Length: 220
Image (cartoon, rainbow, N blue to C red):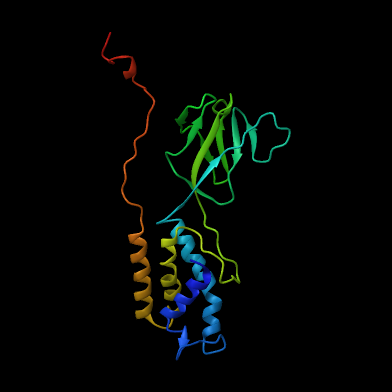
């Protein structure tokens, strides 16, 4: 959904879209005020959805080449390599961090450390011998500018966009009509509740810490 579609739906919810079938002019009544406030409210909703109910995943393969003369994405930090996290980094998705060894074997790993939201520290030995380190993280959404074009697309999955107009409409009427505010905001929260991720199971290999592959731990 693009901004123009969201804007039109907000105006329709407020009964400010047309009069006798003719689009309402910006100079009529409070139309221009509504139009000026909609982009910031849309951004508020998009940001809230992307950091709560429907987070946006990104996969990042860390670029580590110790032979490179110049590099601006990592530096040496004792026995670890400190990578600069992307500007849109919000938080890690736990469990989806992999090391691919030089012989092509993919291993789950958790051997890293977060320093604020700016750096990721990984033991240097994890990155030696041609290993590739891949992480999955949640990112902040791309927001609209102050004067968005109607063609500008909203970030996140399409189903999240249909909740945004109800959020914007609610806060446009918050000072004028408590009933409408409650109706719009309740509908927004209802849509958020229905778009949460479902329950699922994942199967993953783990390290054989107890030596079961070599026989019973009770064998002597």
